[in-house]
Amino acid sequence: MRLVPIGGRIKSASVGLNHLYVTNDVVELNTELKKLRKKPMIELLEAFFPSDITYLKQMMRGVGFYRPVLKTDQGMAGNFLPFYINPNHSNTDLSVRKICKEEGLAIPEAYYLSDQKIVESVQREFNAFNLRKVDEMLQRIGSTRRADKGRAPFFLIRPALPNKEIVFGQDLIKRVSNLVNVLLQDVIKRASEEEKKYSGCCQVDNLLYCQADVFILSDGTVTVEQINCPDVGMFLNEIHSPFSKILPLVQKIVGSLQKVVCRVLVDNINSKQIAIVTRNQVLENQEDILELMEMESLKKGLSRHGVELNIYSISQVDRIPIGQKVILLNVDYQDGQSKIVFDKHCSKELTFYPNPFFQRICQNITGLQEVTVPSKYHHQFLDIIRSMPKNDDAVFKIWHRLEKLLCGYGVNSDIINADIDFEIVPIFRRSLHSWRILNTRIGRYNGIPQIKLRLIPACPQNLILTSDSGPRLHVFRFMFVK
Image (cartoon, rainbow, N blue to C red; front, side):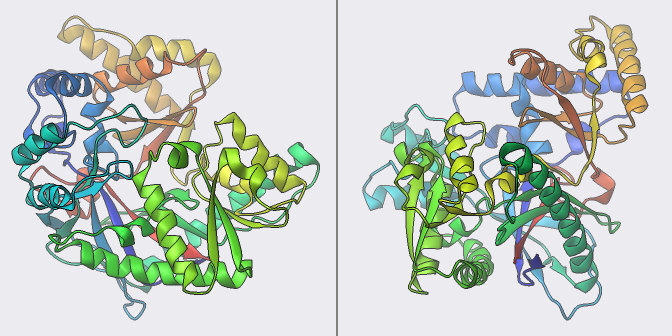
């Protein structure tokens, strides 16, 4: 796969790490974080806007307290920034940049039909981060619904800019490209093994484009977090905001990437009719505005080449004409209905891009160092992390037991993503509270799932982005094409 030498977007946490590093003493830290959960700083509260006090208290008691700091989300809990690639640069400047400008961007959900004047009013006030006014407007609109995604009438995102552009040169691009391709070869190997078990033979991967999330640190360390196959990114082309000054800068990059991707799709699929498959909820309940906009962006891009894109949900795969070429968007392979995709693939009635076995493996593979807690030690591990120490001495004893266990497993990172059956739980190593949340999430399963600890290589000293609330956890999303 070839890295597209244009640029991409940085996915950043919306809150810095300072409050997690106020002290090296684990007893003092647990005391300070307990106070902070009861009285959160404004940056944490903003990450869950719009919310009522009951929801905020719930978030601060649970995983929400860590999400805006230890994850790189698309919505209010994160920021996104542009980065650039200049193949003519030999060496990359990895000096620290500070986030100096931020905007609010309000995207009307697909189900929400409203007067354009109301939409523009919300967009104007949210662009300037006048959250009180926006909240008043949303209260008047009063439109919410039951849904996994898109419950409110607007999806809110936060573009930002650093005080100095981040431009990658040949040195970093070569390393990113090599590491991503090595990981892709591993995916191909595992997918082939899975497909052989399923059908007795295997077909080619049919990977035409993907997006890699990569940690690049100020000391030059490069680590692939995950490969998104394909996930969304081109949706940014479909956002219309007359007030944003940052969005056009990102759209210039994304527009160029879209042209490259559509050209690759046209050249490799070689058909005037292409189908695309998404999750049922996206079409039936219009639940994921980013996915809907992604498909619209692809549809427009392909139409410029005279190619028609027809959209189907998983439950409609039977309606796709035999022999059709099919792009798989973000399919949920936990959904039992996804079996039809594998069956249609193995029978060769439909040709999927990518091979569904490849896509499924890609969803659960990482380039991060990963430690699996042995199943025979699950109960010992859970006994420690569920502990509720009553005093400072008890906090220290529990922490000492946990540290001994983690060091024995080779866990050497402060920031950890616990992968439990396709769910990622962010953990700050020195916070016993965050480990208790992991135990709570595991308790929701029927039996104990496999527990994999993914070690994030970042720490405050090696992050390129910083802010008023401290260094920001962030990844760079690169586009790759065949």
